[in-house]
Image (cartoon, rainbow, N blue to C red; front, side):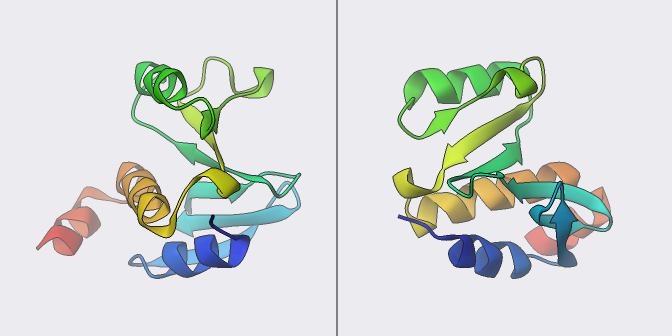
Length: 112
């Protein structure tokens, strides 16, 4: 199980990230672009994924972990139940989301 504090620790360890609120909940940004947000209920995290198809695949493969709501229909964002992932998986999810939103040069420097 991952807590909001775990999410914060993992997200803020990524290069050039910061935290501010989005819709009244903690959200994490890289150079002004959000890459993760705690859901209002505090039980899940919203993260962008590469495509709507990837989102559908995650939900189909692990419905106990990944889900969506009508608000996110048509968007390449998936909700992750904090109680259903371990820190290793959350690190991978946050890093992937960060990579989607970070500038290419920053990603290249991170990978180098």
